[in-house]
Image 1 (cartoon, rainbow, N blue to C red):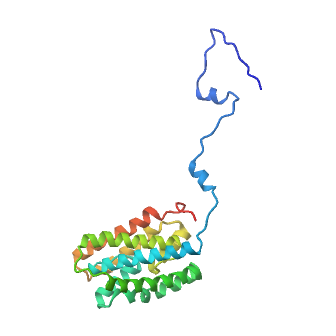
Image 2: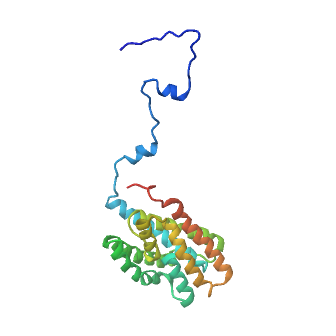
Image 3: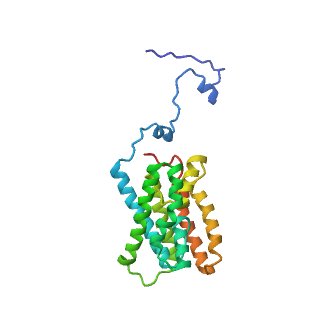
Length: 238
């Protein structure tokens, strides 16, 4: 290797422009986008224990969210909202309503999302109903503020749905349809779910008091906000 020096005369001008520097014949490095490097990293799929723990957390968070909303007499979107609205109209406990209302949506999941997804959703739906019933006995709450129930309940429920989705399951209901729309058409699951929720709230507006309905809207925004922010295609790997 050797160095070559060019002698310049006084009349020469040094060209420091970007094209001149790039055309100097010297190799140059291109900045590497960290996202490109991470995208080449090998995928590490969840193992059975990962899925089991993820489903456990999803059931726990979702059941807590449903329980908080139910104790305040609020509703939300998705299968949980259907169960809560039916409970307020009929006087039945929301726990058994979750798996019962879920039946047609589970059938839909079986055909479009696969039997494995549908089987998980059946287990999750029944488990959430059982845990909601258990929380009513384990957690004695004499009163709960509408604002806290809406924000905390909606956030818990959204986190539960997110955990389930990360491990190829759902509570069923319109959530399964929203996940299918995201996979099939690339539309964010939270946005699709919000559209379904608006239809459900239109129905609820005919029976719920206006104040309860408004607090329920806040809880639904909190729930869907979790999905819109965190459940984006390409954000999560493995």
